[in-house]
View 1: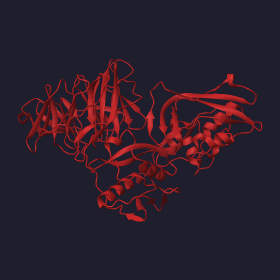
View 2: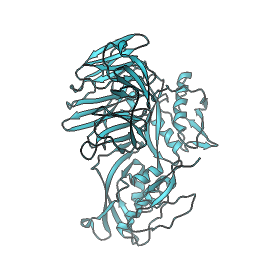
View 3: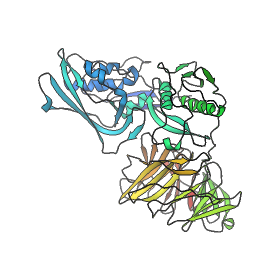
View 4: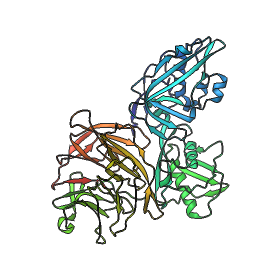
Length: 562
């Protein structure tokens, strides 16, 4: 099978593809952009030269940044050669990665005011894209953010060396994505019936060890209130990390051995699911304090049915798959004219729709139906536990949560800015909610963890985190799978729109969309998307092209499950 390849711009890295030998590249002076072709299926090894004798301050800092880009490969051994002995001992490069746009080059500015005999300073700035903390959690920056760092230089035996610098490193986006991998830690839901992804970025070298260390440290604050962990507190990994041989990860942990089989099974599920993201790992052998834990008898994930959408029309409720439609509920059985339909991501029931100012939760199999009245309800969202969610688009904090049997849950979004909710949708795994809020002229996108009890009943929402980098211009948002969003936004002019794909903890990509699009819904990925325009036209995504949806039935509204 042919390997896909991509072009990687690495303006700060002198890249050596270890398997292919060395390229002839300048070892001093201002950094120059260049391209290398690299397989997407395997990480790159970077290398960089040490300090060049007689380097001027700006050239030395430029070469140091190249050496930082190789740090994930050589544990920053080369980068430390550019530092004084004291600075090398104090510098903590793993504490933070600041990522700048590959489309730009850093600016180097000598600080004339700092010039003294044997001392100077160089300031470096670049357009910021994201920051990754020591736990591998990526936070996107707003579009006008800037990286700004100062390097204080002194002379050591007649050569310039960096004597003072901030902890952390700076990398171009292309260098970062070539040497770090976007992976997930997996934590059980409170009901222990699914695993929830907690996205992280770790160096590709020794990835298995980084993953397990992250798993032992626990979930990030962005998802911690929506998950649990079966791994006992205080469990540790030996300093040598994980041995991977013959595609088997040999995991030896020290800590309390869970006494019950169910908990041991959950521990194995977490560890195996997390480590199997490593390309060289196909199976796991797990030992805790000398006790072998079975890693073959693992729970199964829920099956999400995200391929077929639900639509409403004159004939009632229908399912839509490409150009094929099928009647789901005839209009005569509904007793009302539905709009904004929704259905469960784990089956066709329950269903939900809006009728005037009423949110309807309906179970066709049992005949149960419950209703809740709220002003101008948003498009309903059905989670995998059978709860129907909606919100008043005229009130800043009213959320409707009900089931067809009449059960209700009290959930507050805890908004204190008097913004109104434009859209609200629950992720297919039920662990997160995305909310589009409008305040003044801005429409922003927020994600909160959904807190539940052991039966899956929602009990609240955790702290909301704003999705940065969208210019506060969101029109609508939908989940695309369990840990990515698609966001509909205004284009640069007139009635144009764009669709931005937003992986949680990842980088945003955007493509043009049909004019006057007002609603977006996605299935299992960002490549499975329907758009609706203000004129009622429906489009489906085919790569970067949008095709009109034509069926034998009139479709007024359309929505993927969830």
